[in-house]
Image (cartoon, rainbow, N blue to C red; front, side, top):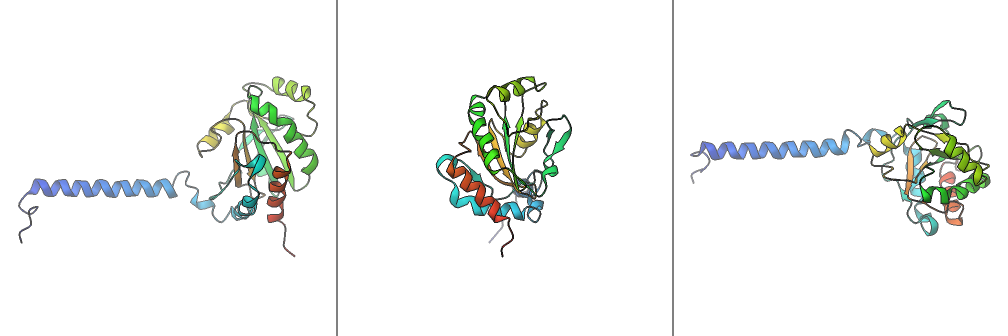
Length: 222
């Protein structure tokens, strides 16, 4: 049987070009998964956060029903902000401690509403192994967030701040923090164990059970 493409050089060139385009598409797809922000290189470094994510899964519900346990934990140790005293800090400074990172602003009504619950959570569960790290992202200085926290009598949360909003930009590059509030549970390895987009009642029994489960996942078994 004759080969029609052998007698039609133009048709043969079209097929080769189509095949090349398909190969290029596959290459791009693979790079999208394994390159850039694919985060494949964190599989080993984020094992603790992965264990935490699996541990908290049964506790997702009620007041924390929108919490999303990480399936491929992201290394968030380079996220940066200012401490209460104005010094520079990154999540790497909290190595060895489980952190509930909350991003908020004074103009964000849901953020303002959930702040007392975060303060209570820090009061009741904060310590050597766990801390609520609330980072304000109001543009400019700290005058407005300081006044707000004073107004609602927050006593247990330190005012962390990022007036440049770089922390938001960095998270959006990873498909995180599409809006405020955003709250991320970060393991002692600096990796994401799970994320909540939107507000939650963080002083609720469901939230405390979720945090407790995460902490238990990293304790030595004996």
